[in-house]
Amino acid sequence: MATDLVSASHSAASGAARKRRRFGWDDPSPAFYTEDAGLRFQPSSHLMMIPQHKSIVDAPQYSSCSQKLLAHQLAAPRKKSPPWQEDDKDGHFNFKLGDDLTSRYKILQKMGEGTFGRVLECWDRDSREIVAIKVIRSAEKYREAAMIEVDILRILSKHDRDGSRGCVQIRRWFDYRNHICIVFEKLGPSLFDFLKANDYRPFSVDLVREFGRQLLESVACLAKHVTPCAHGVPGIADMHSLSLIHTDLKPENILLVSTEYTKVVDRKNTTKHSLYMKRVPKSSRVKLIDFGSTTYDKECSFSIVSTRHYRAPEVILGCGWSYPCDIWSVGCILVELCSGEVLFQTHENLEHLAMMERVLGLIPPHVIRRSTEKARDYFRHGKRLNWPDRSTSGESIRAVHRLPRLRDLIVEHADKCANLLVDILERMLKYDPYDRPTAREALNHPFFQDI
Ligand SMILES: Nc1ncnc2c1ncn2[C@@H]1O[C@H](COP(=O)(O)OP(=O)(O)OP(=O)(O)O)[C@@H](O)[C@H]1O
Image (cartoon, rainbow, N blue to C red):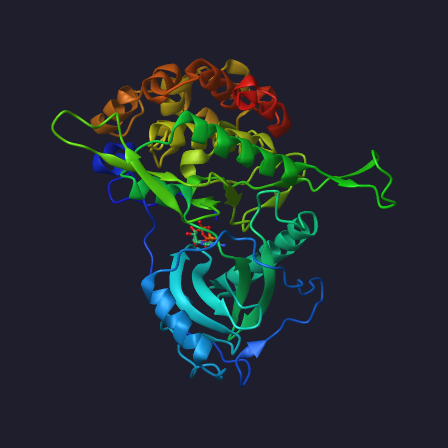
């Protein structure tokens, strides 16, 4: 879900916060019990159950805790759901490791938590595989949003039966004790988690290219999808437009398929006296998750979308946004993967625009002219950004000033192909959304052709 992440001392200013920011979680609220066994499948009004697929996840590496629980569970007979417990104050599902979630799933561990709910690693007794179950918070607004996510996941899964198109696969969904539960194939850590575990050491250009290529393929598939003609005539294709915009692309929502990694010498940091190692994923295969904010293209929308750091200028300026807002986010993500740091570490509009100007150059007048009355307030006489005059603090001015130009940032970090990478990033990070390439066009850029 798109968020403006709250930080104690706002924005770029906080030095240590430059490295990273994270959500605050955990809280309690009441729910109601639906059935004896606790499980209630939703009647298929506009939604249908998804048939089971075989897991395509690479041999997962289980934690020792998961392994023990799994061994125990394989021997244990199927039990009824545990006694009903109150949700926490925010409507999150309360559980203990080893509990059953319906009689079908055994909870092995918590894998993550977000605005919508908790994601639990579970053993599926029926399909005999490990799955990831997103247990949605019980409040009505989250339940409704979850049903939209289920709807979109079902459409994606219909168009991606073999799971090769880079979007996480839904297995099925159900309603349990007032929590919508979405069962997914289990994936590995997010690119954000991987960066963090590596102390924010950047990925190599080869990996950035691989991640970028898959990300753009997924974005292209969301926008438009081609399937073979219904009659199966070779060479003839039916164009099915999915017309979907993800709107919340960020490293947290890009998951490595495999958990496996190797350790190699980190040459950049290693000195005569100390040897530094860094992690490198064994496989570069990634998939997109979190379709909770995905929308159908309506030509142009004006709401606020995307997590702050990956938010396109047209969203901030209220010019109206469409597919190109995903391309802007991909540009910000690729810079982050290459440098190890968030490109625009801010939580405030004017500072954000000032950072963009520092890294990318001045916002062109015709883009300023398209912005709303309110957003035009950020500019002097509707022409130049009111910066630093309207800045909130000296620390904010210094944080903007510390930012390098895009070219310098990439040249400093890229171990190869810096010029090509700068070129494609400059295109994806054009202020005018009409000037940005589509995902397909970006994929044809020489940077992504280089093997
Ligand atoms: N299929 C999966 N396999 C493994 N881990 C997963 C899977 N899906 C989600 N996760 C983990 O759970 C976390 C939260 O998932 P997700 O982003 O879907 O929840 P959310 O509530 O929509 O989050 P947000 O607040 O970012 O919108 C992810 O960042 C990831 O760590």
